[in-house]
Image (tube, rainbow, N blue to C red; front, top):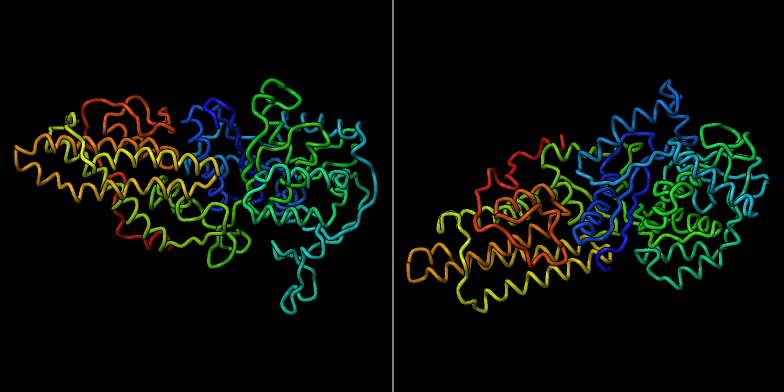
Length: 525
């Protein structure tokens, strides 16, 4: 995209029935990396995250904990969800809660419009309801176990808990009216849903036919009241999806809404159907633009299973950051997992990548370069002599890696961007090995050649600092300061990372960017 364009990116808003685990943090970090990259490119960037606080599951959780739903939500948000953003260094511009007045007011405006325009009607519905998903389920969404505590009962495939049979008088959204418009959208805008596997699944689902959507509940009262019928509250998903527009001014600040919307939406693949079917249909009914893109990323797997608190496979982000640090957490999940696919987490892989790629690869490179400039030129970055083919290859690599990484980010392929950037780490390490600056320093006749080699590796290191600032912001800032970069590294144009400016000297790093960790077994204890 061209510099200066609007780039609005939103995470799903997370359910406050429990504390966050690394699956939630994975989505947050991915969105944050994309937002930081676009900010560094000069784009008009906005990152939204938040919490989903209505619905039957929250009500039941609160009652089970002998408190009110609002008190439960307030405590979880203050004690767990907002601290998560600090733990993993998220640079969000806003945090929306569905219990906020700004959200509830705008939801009511949206709902009334759809009702007035004939897209909502009353009726009766009976079906299988999963409280965990807050969703009515079709038979192919369910499974039956031959033995065990739930033998003979229908279970949700996602949560492995029995569904309930509910029969209610509800209000319905005429979602079936939008089946063909949705299929046309998917065809005319092939990248609207990504990755391809999720896109294909959504298209097949819609082609099977869409039913109208039940959007109200009368069996409990924890939700936004239906404006024309106070005996009903709004279905939690219909409420939650609207956060993406209520947070940027729908119904209250038209100028800001037009500036920001539409958004790129990052979601887990298990909720892609809500975001790629129900959500655009809602927007179409209201005469509003659909999202720019819906990206359904894969699951984090632990022991072959999706990360889950209910199955005791949830890992708190602090369990990792306390040992390896925040930057390593961010780097690992963006590098080790192909964004869009499922990925398995293991302590062994995390430890191995930390040592090989961060401590030995990048961190050691930074320390060596700064140490050599300090030792051989008293910290002064020398002016180069004539460039050889080897020097020019490094300069070409800086430009190539910058362009390739930016192209990957445009595709939301964060792992590919990092893989490209790491080729420069490897090339710089290889260049140092071949050029042997320690040998050049021993002969005054090689002074000019040593100047060129030192200049080249400092330039490469600065390019890396700019490119890696969206992913490992703390380490990049430390490195940038050490090599005399001009201004803050987060203010450098990431799309011109090969063309940075700085001061004439380097200063020693107070400590390694990524200290070696000898004892990692404590992290998994």
